[in-house]
Length: 196
Length: 387
Image (spheres, rainbow over the protein chains, first blue to last red):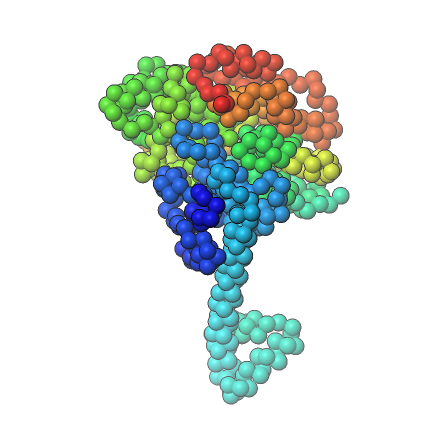
């Protein structure tokens, strides 16, 4: 690999979304040679076929242990494979492990060249985690809204309230009890089901 | 004293003493508040222990040694004050390979020398026919499984690097890979062998206790620096593990121990499967044949919990035999120093320096001599040397 050429990067990740986010980030940063491997069968053979300079793998992927085999003296390895990241660079190992990504750097790639890639991975992995968290939150908000609608309906029917009055009652009860409005709504639904 | 610890484990039966120590309250009684974290790969367990995300871990004994020697990865000295398991692995082969081996075998099918010789015949037949070499799955380059498979086949002249293929497979992928024909056999810990048998895709050919009578398998691993700074916490953790191991080994507690391990956030498999491994009474064939051994897996009994540096030396010798590292007196001392019977003894408040070492007890080859590893290794016909 010449110094100015973009290193060949393999992403091993079973999540297509995260891999896409990562790949996009790498391309934006000017790393044009990116290959995503999703299929874990014959992983080593695929990696050998691509012959990458850097392998990025999701830490929740059990196939990490398969990659470790490449570090070993073996006839199958075409050339020696170097380290994770530099031994002294424990901060960047820690950041990447905490974010959930691990990088294997093949033979002779300079540390200055891997650092931006790993930093990028860490921020993209964190971004992905945040995205998922937001998705979860939106989902639970939607869930809450459905429950509140249902509870309002019950209150309107039983107490003869308008929709606005039912909502105000829910909200003031939640504030008084120091609970979430969704929780109050849920208890109304549960209670009304028990009383059926 | 109270301390909070994060401890990583891989969902295998030999994490039993650690899991029971936490879930049955032995750790809490010692003032330890432990969060157990289930992991998916040995690389993760090692890295998270090394960088301090874990305070302790359920770890393959050879990985602990490799970490202290800086083999395959960054060098982080590890201390192992408790042995989580002795033995516990098995070799499972596909029904097709099993049938072929049984056709050519000369002798008792539970005799590892007879099966290894049968394997040598199958290898020769396949080579003559121009067939692909047989593929064996194991869990990690620095694993007992790797060394046990190699020891077994090499005894009959099968060169594990020339005559067959050895590939690393994560344990959860073993059974599928055997079914799909991706591998012809594998060596792994419980409960994966039993799962393959139950699904009808494998025959347990050997308990590893057929090959080695007494082999250190997993250890409770700590960063040495951390262990030195926290002697009281380490002692409490060792005592909790010792009590858990005693609990597990009591036949009256078998069902409860298996149920604790079976929980979704622990091993997440059927308690009955776990019970088989704990009792050493295993279904070995899809037709229902059962085999029993009181040496299948030792959790604490016969002094199994006390680390024996001679076991570490034996594992180091395997690394040298298969070219993973060169032989040196310094490296040998480093490897042996990973296993810490002194810490174990101190935790239990006793002197253990008069205890004799239990031999590894290999089915073939010379007895292991820790004072002459070069001589010991020279007596094997098959082996590699580090370049």
